[in-house]
Length: 131
Image (cartoon, one colour):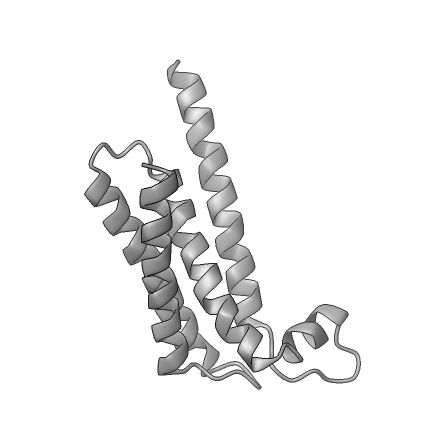
């Protein structure tokens, strides 16, 4: 039983960290496509602004749900949701700051607030489907 629990936790952690890695890659990809860049860089650079804003909310909602799911072994529902929220918002804040260092990207307070809104949406979703 303990081995299957540990394996389950490792799988959840791998999925969540994999998603975090995707978020990091999307966030640090330059915002200006140049000759010779991959199709991925061009796609990120040319994503319309309204879609980018929607993605902030969706991605950070998903992060909270994934962290709440991964931390399921924590008995306290409130602590689990608090930690999931803090981890998602911390990742979002750090990436917004880092984007100020990436060519063609801009870390903004609006985007940071959209990350928080997404995290709040994620809390609601986690309450409805995971707990």
